[in-house]
Image (cartoon, rainbow, N blue to C red; front, side, top):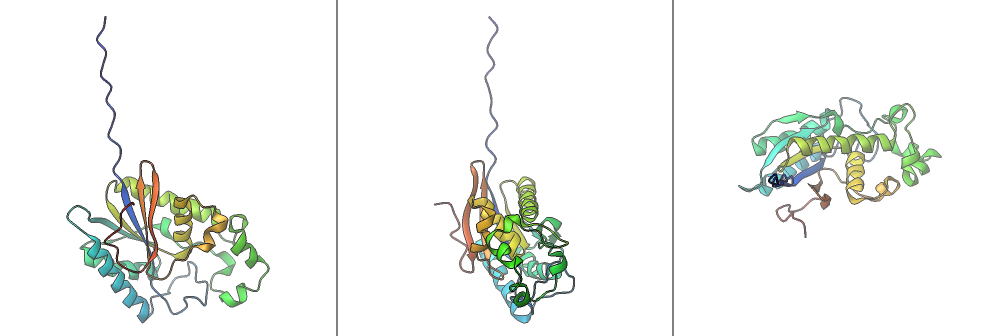
Length: 223
């Protein structure tokens, strides 16, 4: 009788922690839908927020848990936010198109007050999965894009810690996906300027450790 071969199984992939950081405040935050328009930079308050979040993330590091990479969307406001974080960690900022703001198409640059009076605004708030910005991206496409990019970063930095500086709607969509929450409810999630939302990607699935955190990050861990 032929000897039986012992089966070997590969060990499970170690969890990867992704820290999603919204960019800091700009002169138009809460007033205009800037989208992907170039040239929008951080306000003085936003630069102070970026310095503060850099300190918080640097304090998170231990010998066992160190940030492997800092990524940012190509827009100025995210790269300016990522700069202090990368410097505090001794890293460089890597650009990721997958972290871009939603493509708001014809709504880019419009005042939020005016947009909120349009009949389509109700759909944006209550049924975003069924809405496409005129001449731009749908919310569903945005969610697929950001989640696909986070999966790529997870694979590239398996078992490590990654900082991803992005925008409010993509971060909210990624958090909703990790929570198993329908996209139509993602507007209920709040993501403030320079807040940190932490997702631990494990073999069992994602675990949301923090949403919209503006405080101490040192205790981030599954309960």
